[in-house]
Length: 326
View 1 (cartoon, rainbow, N blue to C red):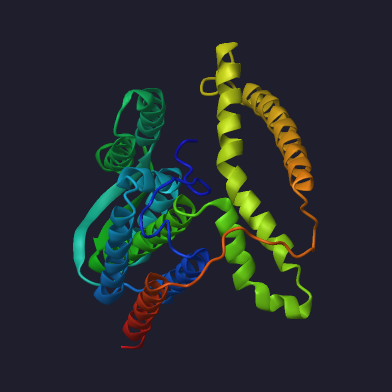
View 2: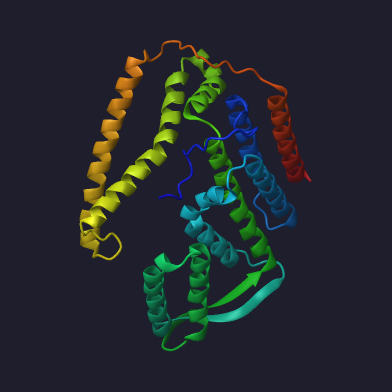
């Protein structure tokens, strides 16, 4: 649960921390639009565009003085999704030059039994491994290797062929998902909840013309992002408390896991309701009234670095549009 980075704020004095929240939000939207404007393709130019975008994001992360490992930890919860997507693209795209194969793969009784044993061994040993992501990739490679070397009592078979077009397309999608996750993590890492609320409310202000409750939407979004890490921390505390009383969340039957999940969800809901009630009382004491105009101590004024950041984001968007057109 410590790998969930969205919603966490890391105090700092970098230029990105001091940037106007409206510019940060608008620039993030522009960068995300630029990321998704690049067409999904098996060509080299879209892949280079994603690599360039990743390089820019890494430079942004370094400039904020936030540990790069902290940002990359946000990718750990979706490692399985990224790996699954990568493998699917390798099997789906069968055009271009052959890079690997053809390799005869067998779905046999021996390979199925070996894969099951491998998965059990992986789950039992991964908690002792320091580099778990690398260990996961090794386990995935071993699953395919077992299908190639254990053809005994074969049930069915298929041919594994990896083409360069498939590798390019898989790498493109992998980098696109990674860029989106890291960009959104950078926003919450460098923006406090109050600033985020102000930024969302300011950008959505034109919707007030059509009677959209912009201030309520902004408050709900900012509070949701703020309490994601808080609830995860509370959940982890409850799991540790139950583990100290003998509850094992890893090694138990399916029926026991259901009862364990229920015993975990009930206190989480109770804590969330209590926290929401405390938050409501605190906001009421401070004079918060739904729908009423509020004043602020800090008044945000656009500076040169804000304008420059917005211009650079628009230039990146223009480059991505150009690469889509050519």
